[in-house]
Amino acid sequence: MPMLPSGRHVGLDPSPLVALLEEGHSPVNVHHLFAIRQWPDLWPWIEVVLFVPAEEAKDSPGLQMRADALPLPPGLVPRPSGFRLDDFETLQADWTADDRAAFARFLHERAAPAFARHLAKARAVQAVVREHAYGATETLIAWWDAGVHPAQLEGWDRAEMRGRDSTA
Image 1 (cartoon, one colour):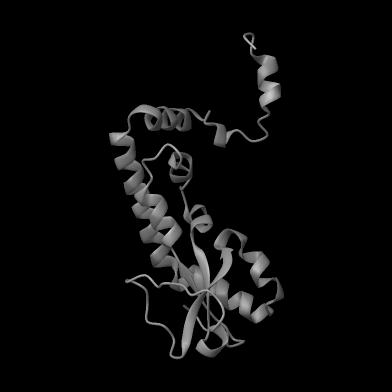
Image 2 (cartoon, helix red, strand yellow; image 1 turned 135 degrees about the horizontal axis):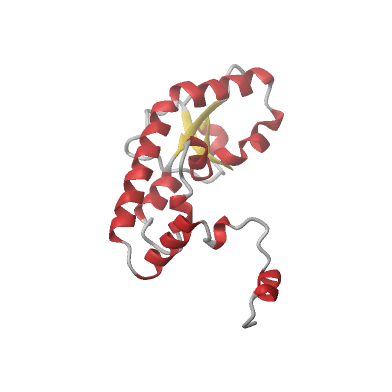
């Protein structure tokens, strides 16, 4: 978790990703799990955390840190930013250019080993889910592999598809 040039402290929380990987076998999650192929695919599943002085955070909701998290900066407490890495541009819109550059360096340098571990874990879970899939999960994986899963069809229009179906 870096301290940016402005003095702002930020961090990353992979809890949503961990939850997805734990429930990757669910038919509801298959398309999310199998869409993870490279680092940016992890970003919708990683929360951005802000660390603020404890006295400023009295009335805001707290955030439980994971057991494997780095130690907190002294005197600061974690607060959810409400943003994930895939929508981080919105959060940093009012940041200085130096803060944006520092956070980009953090993502591509210091966070790189964590992203590599998360991606490796996602691939391992994909392999296990694929090997043990049955029922709806097995069907959804087959659709994903064939490139016809509804989540893969951009611009898919149900009415348009119905018009092509001779049984509709």
